[in-house]
Length: 217
Image (cartoon, rainbow, N blue to C red; front, side, top):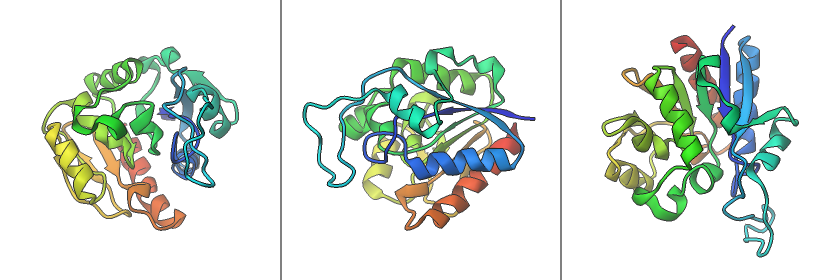
């Protein structure tokens, strides 16, 4: 039975982890008989978005770990507790939290940095040659983790692709229902809601990603 670590970035597409992507990932792992444990950094979100209006909620702050616990039904651990040796693989769902909380890609683009704890964990999985899957906008961090020439996708958004290529990654256009595989890095990426028009489209690509990650593990 494979054991997979999941890193969440809050709760909600505009300021945290994309909820559909996260739940589909957890369901896919469970359906394939894999174990998983959710983690999130104990930190304040970049900002809080009203998901009804799309507006920033000025003066409000929320904690990434506390918000991510909503998705994990409370079964979640602080990221610093993640021991890479205990897990066979890593998966990061998308949502703007990956680009606002786990990194600052949404603000700084190609000049972005990754939260130190997130970077350390992701690099540890890479260095130990353990497979990883990154969904939606989360792959924007990959050049910082795997170095230049890493093969990945965010779908086909030209501006985002230009930014990740400026960081040294090799961007490959990909349909929402498919994945991009970098076998040298043991890495799988899929566009998910960078392209998905409905939950079924997102699920098709995410299920393929989970299959590939478990196969590599």
